[in-house]
Image (cartoon, rainbow, N blue to C red; front, side):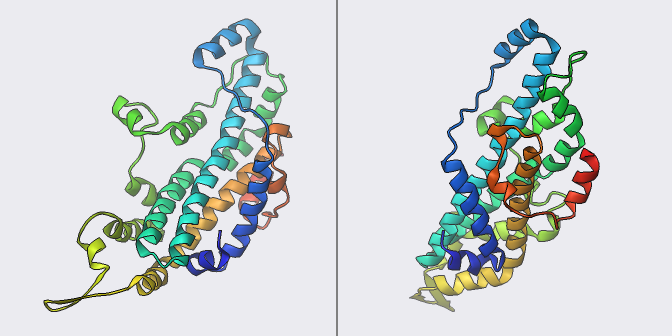
Length: 287
């Protein structure tokens, strides 16, 4: 990923973010674990055979596993779109630039919508889940249905699910971008401008023309258009970029507190996020 191109779009946050990406990517490239899930039928069968202690242990381990996989796969999906953004800038291709920014917006707001709550939810349930993963809760069956549904929606949402009316039907781009904590960034306005370019419509053709009354001449406007877009939207895009990256890193750091090797991120442990206010709440909850 090209630092200069990323910095052009997102400003000073790009340099730190590239270092975060380098550390996490290197770690995952060396990850040889297999992450296995039971089918519903298989889980029920094993639960009936092994009792509450095993059931709670496996159930909580699966929740932590889903969080680990969701936080990283969502993060890498976003980074691939940023590769496209950088390619658009470096090759002076405004359509590639806009389509990649649009993909980034959709991916990042989906990530934020699903995983923003995860660090505090993990912290709130840290004591209970820690006992469960050690097999120490044997007198009752515990559950985290809301958390489970959030993770399933993030990981399983598809058009097919929507047609089937299942709980993980995808939301609209507007629902993500105008959610309570993102509405102030005016991301949906940005998204609308991007759609004007990426859809096969008038605006995507007029990129190549100068119009003076009814006189048209061919034009090469990519550099000017990219600069105009960045001048207008760099700040909210930078804000979104950092919010999503912080969620990823903090989620991995809270997972580290469970001290489970296959969900432990040394890359996240090497990053200092203690200056973020969320840690005050996390520390209070896990004590």
